[in-house]
Length: 127
Length: 137
Figure 1 (cartoon, chains in turn green, red):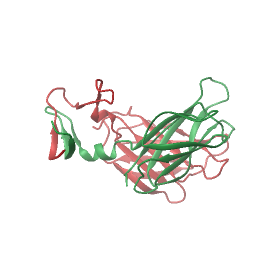
Figure 2: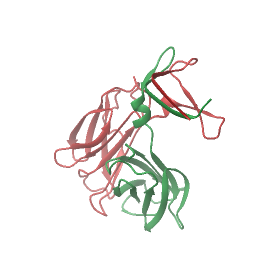
Figure 3: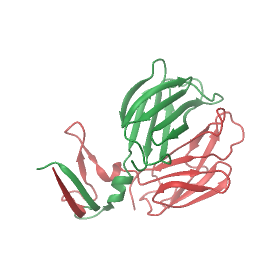
């Protein structure tokens, strides 16, 4: 079987369930990352991420390998710790371009704090 | 190398399920279920406006940091997962995400809310990002 590209408008099963191929193209995350934001930051796993850098306490800059078509792509994420102290954690978004997504970790009453667990995904059109 | 041009890809066994072999070359993953079914990036300040979206029909501003989205093509269950994040308007103004703020999720859409990290009053944000997963109706 030759390797190559599949172009289709719809994915449909034999007995039920069809899926317009726009869901395949637009519904696929184009970049994601899971990293440890404490100490020397380290990527645990990622897709389409070129680099991750520590930009200060709770602040992280992330470069995307293959850029998006513009800076309006949609990013959602979460943050966590490996213990229950220090209040609720979350991931906030910072400045972004078509090729970068900067984020922060924050928790109750603290606007920026290093997190052991940081995850986010980016949805949108690639350039 | 080749290119296949078709209008539909049709499976032959389990209903509503097309399997894709994963990166580990053995385990399969469900193609349909693994795809996001909707996403949106919008300006939640002033008169709300959509920057970019997929499968979103409407965006509604309910109150401060409280928004509703409706899907163009509905999802199959009200239990579908929704995630969200936003860019804070200032270095000390960051809000966490609540996927449902006292309004039950529906197959037609969801109401979301953002809460301030310092417990103060919540305020509208720009941009706000949401992603919906799950099955289509």
